[in-house]
Image (cartoon, rainbow, N blue to C red; front, side, top):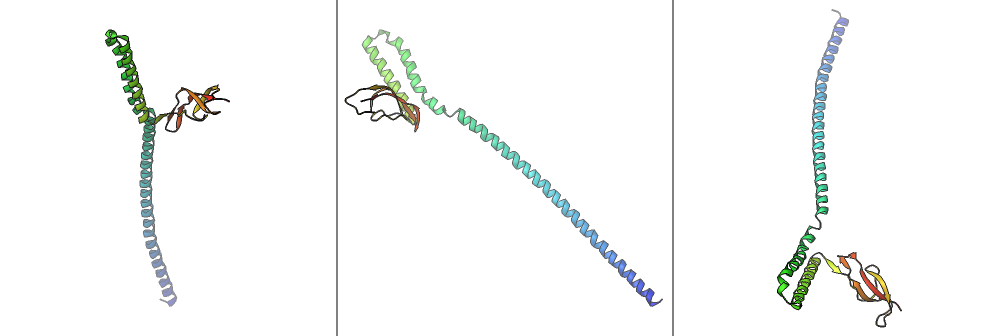
Length: 188
């Protein structure tokens, strides 16, 4: 064989070897790409599943909190209502005592009735105190934020714009006005 042929054969062998190497190199790369792709797809599915679960948990918590909020609003006055049961009981006992008092003289019956009404009022004020309900002060100067002036009276004992008389009590819940005090004020 000639040298040219030997060189050609050697070149062909080199080319075949290079092709085999390239083919061998491509196969693991393809397998690696496929395995990485499969791993990434699996991780994506896991992440999507995790997201859906977290989102569902969030929606459940949101619904539960909404329900609790509405329950809190619906039953916010429950404690106050329970505290009003004692005055109601006192009034019902006063009505029931009417039959027992038929044999009593009128003066004694009126005294017992007055005592029952005073006890009932005391029960109301106790309930009010528990829930921070206070009476609006009517001593001193007229304040349109807390007082409702229904009359103006000439009074030598009071300064102009001061409250002369309370006609109806006003009440506050903490610092919020429930009802203004109805008053008459001095006008000079």
